[in-house]
Image (cartoon, rainbow over all chains, first blue to last red; front, side):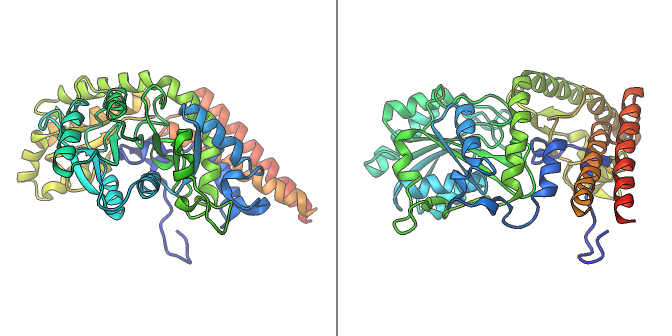
Length: 380
Length: 59
C-alpha cells in the first residue's frame, strides 16, 4: 500500500487468473515491464528530441514505425494515444461535418463517439441478431446504397470492426474491402482486438487505414497507446503537418504517446510478432473452452460458431437461476470466483458475461472450468 | 561508486521482474515445477548479488 496516495498495489496477474477480455491481450512480457520501470518518468521519450515523436532516432521510434507498417502490410504508421484517437484522426482528416459514415452494428462505442465528434451522420450495418450477431460483409452494400438514396452521395468513410468487443466475432475484412473498392469509398479497419493477436495484412484486406490498440492487443501498457497505419495516398491528408510547426502532424496534435507506453509498445513488438504466429493455437484453446463451458449444461456461447477468437460471450441461465435465490443475488458468481482466485467476470453478471482465454495456459483454463462446475454443483 | 549503485539497483529490479513472470505463469497457486524452482533460485541469487554489491559500494 502506498502511504502517500493510499492506493492498493495491483497483483491481479500474479495472484489471480484474470479473464477480463479488455486486459488479456495487454498483459506485458517481463522485458516490457523492465523498460516501463526505467521510462516511467514524464516525457521520457524526449531526451533526444528531434522536433517530433515519430522521427526520433533515440529511442528508435522512427525505425519502429517503419517495421510496424511492414508488419501490418501498410505504407506508413504513427503512434496515437489509442485506437479511438486513431479513428477520430482519420475521420477528422478526410471527412466534413454532415457527411455520412457507415459502420457495423457491433462497433465499439468509440467508433460511434468519434464519428459524432467529427459531426458525421452515422449509418449502421445490421448484424444477424441473436444468437450469432454476425456482421455479414454483403450487408455493407445495402447500407452504402441506403446512404446514396438518402443523401444523394456516397459515404465519406466505411468502418469495419474486424473483431467486435462483445461477441468476439471475426468479420471477413477482405470482402468489405472489395465492396469499398467497388464503390470507391475509403475503408477503415478497426483492429483493436485483432492486430497484435493475429496476423493482419492491410494490403490483402484492401484497407486504406488500419487502427490498432497497444493496450488491448499489442502487450503494451504503462499508459495507453495506439497505432494509426495508412496507405501512401492518404499521407497528405491524414499526416498533414501544421502550417506553422512543419514537423508536427496536426491530427495527433504534434506528438502523441510521449512516455513509457511508447517504449513498452516497442519492447513488446518482437514478442507480438512471435505470438501472432501462434494464433491458431489460441483459437483452438478458445473453442475447447467454449465446448467445455457448454458441457456444464444450460450454458450457451453466443457469436460465431465455431468461434474464431479468444473473446467470448456466454449466456448462462444456469447461473442466473442460482442468482434468483441466492442472498447475494447476482453478485454471488463474482464472489465465488474470487474465492477461487479467478477474476475478470464483471460483478453482478449472471445472465450472460464475457471473458477471454488469451495467453492463459490449458492448465489454468481447466481450473476455470472446474471452478464453474464446482460453483454450479454446490449452489444449484 | 554511484554508477555501480544505479546499475545494480536496476539489475535487482529487473531480475525481480523475471520472478514476477514466473508468478504470472503459475497463477493463482504457484505450484512450481522443479525447473521453475531452479529459475527462482537463480533469480534470488542474482538479486542477492546485486544487493551485496550495493551494500559494498556504500560502505
